[in-house]
Length: 346
Image (cartoon, rainbow, N blue to C red; front, side):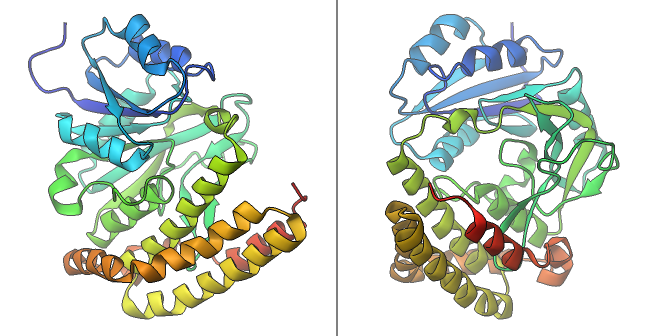
């Protein structure tokens, strides 16, 4: 039986066709039967075409801590927000459906947040589920133009990230967020759908003066790529559009005027050059068009973006230099473009 008092943690796991991918059974067995018990968990399904909802209800519906939310549209951020509005925990646990925890990891994350009131959000050291010696993520960053960087991604774990460290942003696959900050920082941007929603939230937290940490004593395992292994080329192109337009949105909303004016034209140039390369050299016309579509979307929705920017900037307590500039990666634009040019034609 669940205690009548509010749970300590409200876990939110998102899903799209996770049952046919063989992810959900293992995820729920691991999470529901783990050593940490003081939680409620929301299973948010995004109109899966498999039997995810029916099978989760059949196999795990007896657990009173589980609530199933069926999002009528395939929009991850809206689905997560639906769960946030129903949640009652002190902390909100954002989770992918391909995440697993080492013994005591959740307790360590919660205890850290309890003892560090300045922390708005944290993640553990995320390792590859398939190779526990490989790092999946010890945080996320980007350069001034929004080019994303997964800290430690693919590196051999030799203890080089075993000290507590501040990071620009947490990984989107698993993080713990302080629920009491919602009235101040807000929830996820419902217009993002997928991509950069974690970075956007982290920047908003940082502008308000809260810190974001990677706490490496909490070990988490991630089956990276498993949840998107059977995604069609058409859907991949749609996801690329959302990532590209959300990158623009994140910069416009969170940067000060000078940094935004410096960055947006460069982002547009990167999209144009990359889009033309994808269309005419790689033959990936859907991917190339997604970049141009993101530029058009930003222009057509400029007034909406300005309203969102006004809301974020009106609340800020720190300058860009105080909040996040020290955590940006330098030189990523050139390196990222070289990697893009050298990548194999699909």
